[in-house]
Image (cartoon, rainbow, N blue to C red):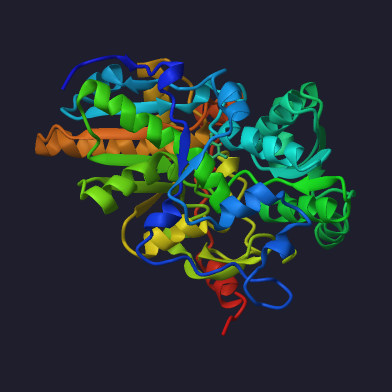
Length: 453
Ligand SMILES: *Cc1c(COP(=O)(O)O)cnc(C)c1O
């Protein structure tokens, strides 16, 4: 084992292929179902809102998929991202554990989301599309897609969940700087939005609702496609570059993680860092634990049901087999907006169901406490979402302190928190509340899941 503070790969060493875990699943995925017929979705069903290359990737069983040259060139603006040894955090915790983090916060939009925004814009442009419609929670996905659309001369329209639109006005400004049109969701722009406003004029919105608005927008126009920042197989495929780089970086220092941790909203940054390690676990018998971390306010994996459900409130999307809290679940307005999604990626859900992935949930106060510990020791302000992973990494490091074991812990720093200072203010001034999730509500919503024979 060699000691290094920052482990860099050169541009030449950047992986040239994405890893598709569909090739290695112990149980094959159950197919997505057409919302109207409840029959498996056909490629044609998706063609109204996705370009052919992404539909092919969504269904592909190929283990390795080449990254297009044009995408590699744009990735090289910030990739490979550094793997950093958190010496100062280790010291602060007095732990014998070695803690590493992969810093995806160095991307131009400030999170891992740019890794999929760029290829999605690329494949849409290649298919002759002029405009993309999407939703955004905390604003990271909207920012990532707005700038990716710029690289390829596409227009971008973003439906931003209202609670975040109000909490994070500067994320909206950033999207507008990049040339995107941004609407608070529920909005007056779509039938779905207008209906939601009639039912509840003070709705905080949710990712599920914003997705319905964006899908409705895209389905209604020939020049427009829909773009999703998480959950789907092709998104997790693009994110695999994170873990693939980590594998190369660990080789350089002759170390290997015992535990890999990522926060989990729809599952894309977690899948991105963890799946290349699961590949080694499944194919090469590597002994590695992977842990997904979610908020107690939206405990999809730890409290949800494994069932077919819609991806959105209005039931426009295909039914996906996934862990879900029910597509009508409107999570409390916690500060980690990117983790307020009722479902989880079908790939991640299947692996979790098969026992290859562990999950845990934390309330936002212990999460912010961990964020502050990290910020004060490493000097980086983490996104509230990423701080969930930090909380778990710190807890594992503290377990090592108890047991005296020198484990190697890797977590994904999925993004920086420069736009989240309102949340940090709330925490530091003692105004943050720990929203416990409403158990009866979750039970009621679970009972309302669509029944599939
Ligand atoms: C969007 C986002 C998440 C959650 O989404 P996943 O698809 O679960 O990764 C986590 N961290 C950051 C910084 C995000 O922007």
